[in-house]
Amino acid sequence: MLKASPVEDHFVDVLIIGAGLSGIGAARHLQRQCPGKRFAILEARAAIGGTWDLFRYPGVRSDSDMHTLGYAFKPWTDAQAIADGPAILRYIREAAMETGIDRHIRFGCRVVAAAWSSAEACWTVSIETAGETGTTETMRARFLYCCSGYYSYEEAHRPEFPGEADFHGAIVQPQFWPHELDYTGKRVVVIGSGATAVTLVPAMAERAAHVTLLQRSPSYVVTRPGRDRIGERLGKLLPAGPAYALTRWKNVMTSMLLYRLARSRPERVKAAIQRMASEQLGPGIDAGIHFSPRYKPWDQRVCVAPDGDLFAALREARASIVTDRIARFTPRGLLLESGAELAADVVVMATGLKLRMLGGMNLCVDGKPVRINEAIAYRGMMLSDVPNFAMAFGYTNASWTLKADLTAGYVCRLLRRMDRRGVEIAVPRREKDVEPQPLLDFSSGYVQRGLGALPSQGTRSPWRVHQNYLRDLLLIRYGRVDDGVMRFGRRGALP
Image (cartoon, rainbow, N blue to C red; front, side, top):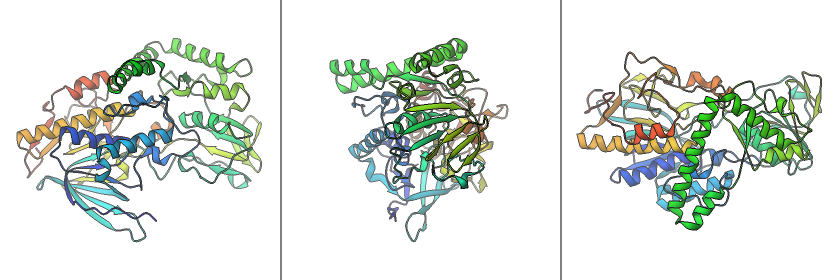
């Protein structure tokens, strides 16, 4: 049983929740830009890494390249730009240890509630500690910074199907991958069509007798080189830092241009993606059926197949793809609505995440509960009328870290501005004429299921979420902190 780290410092200037990719990056910004601020990180799990410590399924990796998913302060030097989960986890842990951030982390500490007092200008945080005799402790902080991600670690989206109890094989979920599962020589069916399914199929096909990707509807899948050849050439010509920075900007601009092209000329991009899939699949598989979604490119996230690994597995018949619906489980596999049957020894439910904001903690301000779904996101990183609070929430069309990095830099700017003005409170006040809209304009199933748990966005800046790194760079890194919406004040009452 996990032994929780003691909460030794019960009052800090900044309390970071989560020791994953965002939390470690936030702490590094504080070290560099606000060196006088005392900070601590609370992590519910037993180790650094967040998503990359949780997910252990075969082939786990990122769709984003590590030159943009990685930290600006730590060059990515591995050969694989599209890195696997273990490599990303090592990178995050190295960053924490090299900077001494690991010494600020308290493990086994789950934040369940946070209460703001304007009279004292601080948060009081309730913490459940892990262990056989789990206890509840409290901690106080001037500023609360939530870096706990956007989905539940304890529960995935798991649809139930008739006849599951009759199935003689194993049913597993990627988020909770059983380390003892041996699928060597087994018949595997992966249910799903998102990034996890696209990752699992070629990885499991290396050992399984056969893998079938069963999807209710298709997704866009594009091939991308696993290595960045231009980045490698730059690495031979320049020191690691400049080479990394140039490669990072190259990839940022490339992804933005491709995204804009997809949104402005969706039919042309759709045809190009389908043509690329057809060329890699060969004549035996109809890309028009299996890789031609009804929606436009980037209405949902576009999946990546590094070096075409999914297409290779399908082309070489180590895997197959079926677009159909499940009628029921049978003792030997799955019966589909078309009447076809899929034999299976292992069924993997790659059916999506369950959205959850702020790690599930409850917020209240001066005794009044904060309803997240009634708040409007300020610059995509703070909540209307919630003081001294920020959250890391990345892009849907680019690397998560790009927005998380901008957020961390903004928090430091805000803290420095508060110090210069001699105030203890900063709060973005909701404007009455700002109409709320869904935070994410994304048709993915996990997003649509979870919209009710998310804050809204507004129709204009600073309430608008742009999903555009260059625009955010100008507004967040170089825009005014005291923009008239952000109010400042001293302890006693909200400004």
